[in-house]
Length: 182
Image (cartoon, rainbow, N blue to C red; front, side):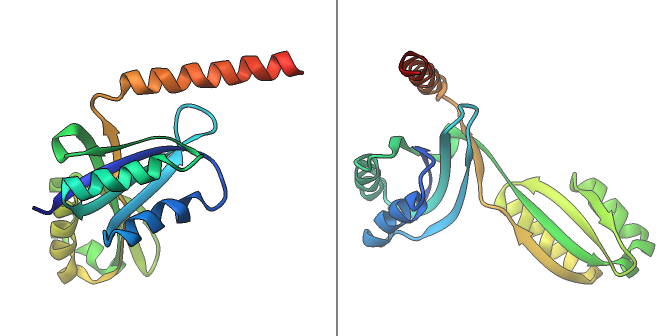
């Protein structure tokens, strides 16, 4: 049965690694619904957060293939209850709507905030789960929505402490090895 999963991949920073990871999903016929990547708290180690709809068994095979890539430290499959996650949305609205007191109440009631105001438009920021961001989009449409943009998922795994300790140990050993060579 297909359901939403979050795949986390810890990797070195190498040119082309995004392509090598995503092509594995493509070959298995799995569509990536969001992909976010950034450096972790460990210099030189990057974390890919990939959201997909798939069957668990099929996804486990993909993760196994990803881990065979040289630049990969580890890859994991997570169900929704194993991660704390958020997404970010920006909504560009016509400034004419600011004179309507209802939009200010809407912004406050949805824990959003205004980032910038110009003569023609203002930008609202909201973080939350995808359903919340889409609900906000629908609520804002009557107020002169000009543009909407949403990020991919940003997630922290609830049980990842031991793995992060391991990565920090590896980084320390590499630093020691580098000092010994110098």
